[in-house]
Image 1 (cartoon, rainbow, N blue to C red):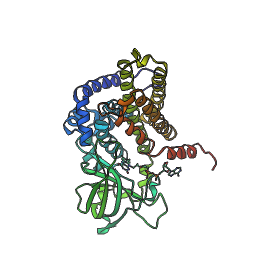
Image 2 (cartoon, protein in one colour):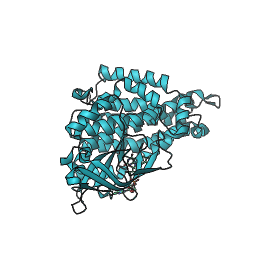
Image 3 (cartoon, rainbow, N blue to C red):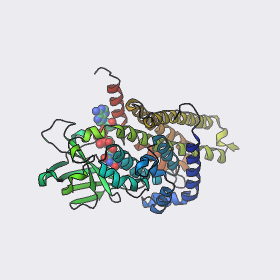
Image 4 (cartoon, helix red, strand yellow):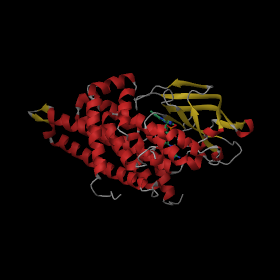
Amino acid sequence: MTMYFSDEPDHIQMLRATLRRFIEKEAPRPKREEWRRAQAWPRDVFAKLSELGVCALTVPAEFGGQGPDWYAATAVIEELSRCGSFLAGPYIHCAFYGGGNVAESGSPEQKAVLLPKIAEGKVQFAYGFSEPDVGGDLASVQTRAHLEDGGDTVVINGSKRWCTGADWADYIICLVNSDPEGSKYRNLTLVLVPTDAVGITRAALSHRNMVYTHSFDVHFDDVRVSAENILGGPQAWNEGWRVLAGQSLDVEKVEVAAITYGLAQAAVEEAWQYAQERQQFGRPISGHQAVRHELVDARTRLQACRHMLYHAAWLVSQGRPASVETSMAKLFVADVSVQIGLACQRVLGAYGLSDEFDMPQIVIDLIGMPIIGGSSNMQKNNIAKRLGLAE
Ligand SMILES: Cc1cc2nc3c(=O)[nH]c(=O)nc-3n(C[C@H](O)[C@H](O)[C@H](O)COP(=O)(O)OP(=O)(O)OC[C@H]3O[C@@H](n4cnc5c(N)ncnc54)[C@H](O)[C@@H]3O)c2cc1C
């Protein structure tokens, strides 16, 4: 597929048009406000969304999917983010956390069982990476796992923090230290832990961003799962970092950049419309040069974000090396979108802080983006390292 600087292919244009109609019909402003207050995503609307086949975009055809088409899936996140995180969030948990990881790294059994359900949007995943004492330095996780029953059972003890969706996900993709004597990066394993496993308890955290759901502290107290639940199967024991740092990491950066871009776009659209309706000093405020320029700056920055995002998504779709470009996209889109959001909020004046508009929630969501999914500093570290900058 040739994409760079060309029009998007027909199937992407049709996908966007379908999703715009869907969002208009299924996620009008009063509904979004209802979901925001409840801090919950709408299961019924997500079920209808899944019927459009969008979750299948990250699943290979042999498992009932239509992909992986990372470019199209990125466009889905963007379009869904027009209504905030309420549909983009669960879409990412299913199609990206699930589809991306299982399709790339799952064992044959995991693929056969999970991928057809992912394609239908019927199984959900949460990420259990962060811990109370572990943020960016993920390879230092302290949640421990060891093997029992001759290697057939994995036993997990420890605590995860910020595990988003741990109450409704079917599986937590849990990063554990599986060899305390082993060297860093070679002592880690990813385990698909069913959320109803005996020994799991959870406590919701209070947070203002990404309010499609809650994030949790999740405690693992002698949680026992089959070694078949190791992502990649029993032979992937201690291979967690290789799995985590593969294409899934590039996909993860694109997915965070995509929701960020979609939210920034929603901010620009709300401010653009408001500025033409709100009259002050006898004219729409968009007629005042300062406001006019603020809006044009925001659109220009947004356009730059679009190029960064879709170039990275295109590289990933082509299976090309994209570690630098995906980090640059995540870094640039997240940092610049905070500026876009704050500028758009200023255009709305007092109403930029009113729950009658999407703006306050969008801005809070955007402020979180340079932190979550690998902070801006971590992206800079990665880019410098990959480009061989002497330390
Ligand atoms: C709403 C929400 C949902 C989340 N959902 C999930 C989830 O589902 N699963 C999950 O596992 N995690 C989740 N997280 C956690 C998120 O991924 C982490 O917040 C993120 O990885 C950063 O970790 P930290 O906040 O502990 O920051 P830290 O790693 O403690 O960093 C703090 C600051 O120090 C800087 N810093 C740290 N190390 C370096 C360095 N080497 N060089 C330069 N600067 C550095 C960082 O850039 C940052 O500015 C979520 C967080 C939020 C807020």
